[in-house]
Length: 120
Image (tube, rainbow, N blue to C red; front, side, top):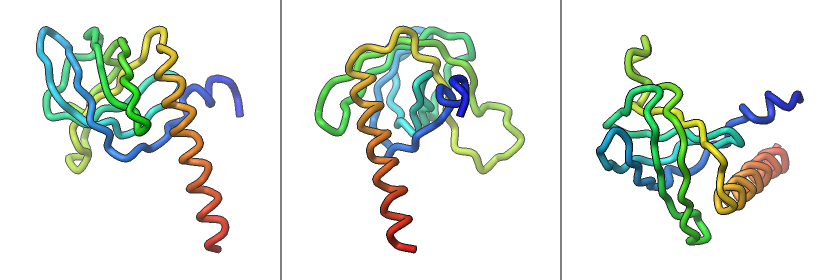
């Protein structure tokens, strides 16, 4: 797998509540997936692509994760109306807590794959 593919690899997470601030508004959403490059947030209020965003959530271990980034894309205008609303964020200079959370998510994904293999 290439370095750029590793950065883009998305890891599904159980809808973790996230508070975010963008365009002068604060709102609540849920993390849907994470990667080395950023996160996807399910939310009803969608900031515009290019908007600066601050987000905050608690990892499953209870550690507070504060991160900042930029909205790269939203589901607004996608042809598939079954796609839940949300937006992708590129994280700028991820803090140490984000890396710890990402390692946890990777471990969970690996465990899920092992469980599936054992079930076969």
